[in-house]
Image (cartoon, rainbow, N blue to C red; front, side, top):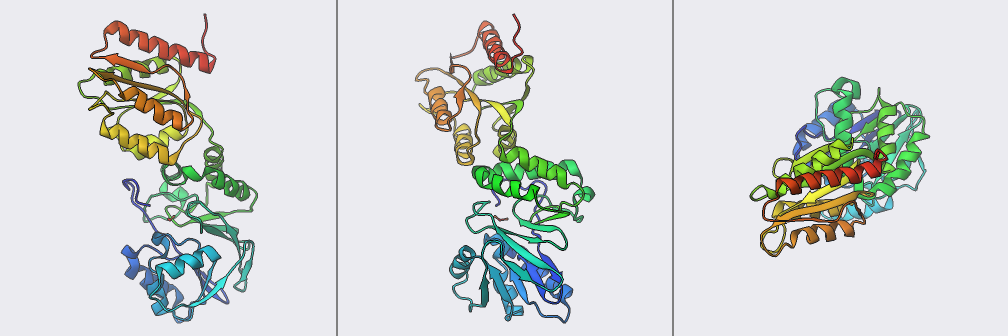
Length: 376
Ligand code: FEO
């Protein structure tokens, strides 16, 4: 999952239930294998490990299973059929442990605790599932509701609501977004579950702000949009930058919150987090070798993969000859089924002050029409 810089760190969370039977939910990344095995051993003490629930086989949650099996060879693995197929592929040299393949909705009885398994395919791999403990009202959600956020504290209110929600949003925008339809089903189901804690496999455990994280998922999985605009550009000699600024000023005067990004200054993961909840997107590049500048090409590639929906766009850029860049950007955004807000802005050499004023007024006018704020 290391698709973006982990500026606030990353944690791999694994949980133990001590009951008549002992149960471990998920393992961790290989980078912390020794610490993990030691901690599990400390928690279990002299007791054996009866069950290992595997909710997801991506290596950040499964890479240390073989090490765990060396210490607890008699453990029974609880998983679904897709996870079992991946397990055989990942660990072909490991002696097959006893495996209990469960079905959707099946219950595992640990004594006081009864675990129910809900399959969540494509959130964000085909094998994913979550585990619900009715007695504790805990949802062991694995990736869902997670954040790339590491702290010595464990719970949402200890780490801080604002950063926890922001990182949950960034995680969703960069990892889950292409699977929004599938995530919607899980978010809808979670709203109807009696939940007192969401024990994620990354970041904080949601305990004191369950309504807030469920609300955030409600918005993200229904592609809810705000009156926001994102303007992204690269520039060679400043012309495309001037157009970007003129568009931004026009948008801002129309009353929309605008985020203006030079692609070289901000990572694509932060930009996409803004794009996900915005209504408007403007992307610009000058023509460079009959093409667009590489950083904008990379951003468009990233955008295409994550496939946000429902945006209105402007393509823009300057040129000296050729002038292919705006059509290339336009084609990419049309392929995403975005709707054109304003005809492409294609500027020969340098934009005059009159041109910039016209761009600003036109962009603002179009947004005023969109938002119903236009008065004449
Ligand atoms: Fe955290 Fe999809 O693994």
